[in-house]
Length: 327
Picture 1 (cartoon, rainbow, N blue to C red):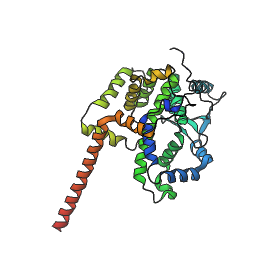
Picture 2: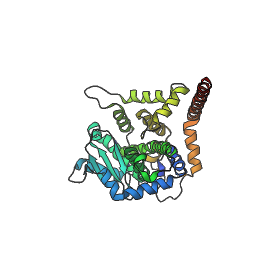
Picture 3: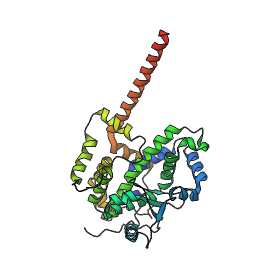
Picture 4: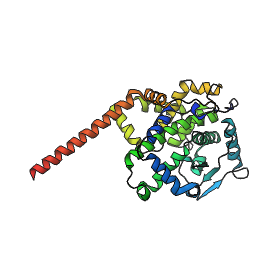
């Protein structure tokens, strides 16, 4: 593998998925959103957040998991990020990692993820989580995790706020934010096969004495996106509505599409937006890009969902009327 290029002063807008920024702005436009953010942040505070996430974790450093720490320093250097967010490993078989916190975000990696992945795949995870921090995702990610863990109903200070629209919009943004950070993970490894093998193992586990194929997984990802009728696409939308992460096949297909677009090659070739560049794509451009990215397929699926719900409502109404008349 050729040496990784240091991405000097790279701005997060260089890699962010347009649907990420569009979804976040949609989330912010929901009535009560600012209230939810403010109340949760005030209730838990920075200390409370650390206690919530670090009740059973070990801080990584030069003398604690030194190999992981050294790799983390390399990721910070590749992404040219001057700060060193704290890094922790927590003992749990769940395969996951997160970047959380309000004022001073930190990264937590589950031991199950370390056991599953090879060192270079762990590098991809470190870059992915650093990408969340660089993009300023952690406030909203933290709120999403709190709400999923504790539940709206157990936070009485949120009473009176319309919950379902907020939940759906928050989860939609959360998934789109993952697509952005997948790109940051690739930029930290600068090895597309490493990113694809990471998605593959997170979706189906490691070899366990057998053989796994990145190429077959990519074909599966392509099939998931392109095959099936409108009803299949409706279920794709429904099945992901309350998930925090897109399916592994979707993440692989999205990242491959970005690579094929030439944007990844431009960045590692030195052509990217810097942090000292104040220009940022306007929201209207993000929405247009996101709409073009997903095209008529998503629109058709959502229209079909609306039709299904409408017909279900009408059927219920007719049944209720008939039942009342029989009485």
